[in-house]
Amino acid sequence: MKIAVIFPKDSEALFNRASGRTFGGANVQMFMIARELFGRPGVEPFSLIPDYPVIDFDDADRFNLVKTFKENDFIFKKIFIFHRTLRRLKPDIILQRGLTIESCFLALYSRIFGIRFVFMLAHDIESEGRYQSSGKKSILFPILLKLAYLIIYQNSYQKLMIQKYFKNNPYRFIHIYSGYPLKKKRKNKGKNILWIARCDKWKRPEVFIETALNFKNTQFIMICPSSNDSSYYNYIRNKALVVSNLKFIHFEKLENIDSYFEETALFINTSEYEGYPQTFIHSAMNSVPIISLKVDPNNFITQHNCGIVCNNDIVFMNNAINELLNNKELHELCSNNIYTYYLNNHLISNTVSKILDNSM
Image (cartoon, rainbow, N blue to C red):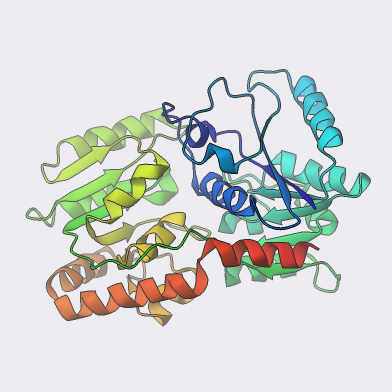
């Protein structure tokens, strides 16, 4: 069985260790899936990427990389090269994550050529039929839902939204958790407070900066790659650089992210909404409790006592940080709980097995 894993256009830093280009959680998860697919009995995976000039990364021998078009190619040239590549590979399954215009056309393309198109929602607003990048409504989203072989959602909200489109239609959708490789449990001795996200307004990075001002004796670390809004990024960066106990980092490579979690006491999320942040899984595999201002996908933080959800109340969040920093028994309990949750739900081997089982 041949599987074509389609990588988002902004994935260069995953395949070139010298690249400093921003990437998101969808890119990371496709990377994990493609690497795990390699070597599976009866499976021949291909990772379709733009024609990046340099390929240099760890585990390159576990990827069948297939370069397609150059990023600056004219649109019709891109379509032609992509079509030619797929006709040459003849995949049985196309796996793609994150709603774009291309996603919708891929669903139609796959139906025409008898390919099973597996689409993975990357964010809550995508389940509303809106593009994550712009928030604009996609008029083609219902077509994607009708033509896709399998829709993979991340949380109960996404499932609820999808059901509104086709209440009586027999389409396939399933909940599958994102996954990471098995990591041995460690004793959480971190002292830092960590925040990682793109510099998007809806992720509310300014809240984290303001929070650092309330905990002058604690080291805060902020990894905040730029987004498309350069003026907002410059505002956030300048605001962060004057806070003495806050270390601002523009960009960090995927392979280095765990080293920050290993030195972290608490992970903070300030977003207005999310899908299922990959950073939550990083927290879990490193036994780091989460304090989330609002987001709690599937209520796992609250239900499994993996940290504290603050009901969008900043004062509550400050109190929660203080509580977990000073209550060692509570911190250890949350630390153990979140690691157990990771073992039970987020191993990449289980994620890929479920995708394969439901894509046959």
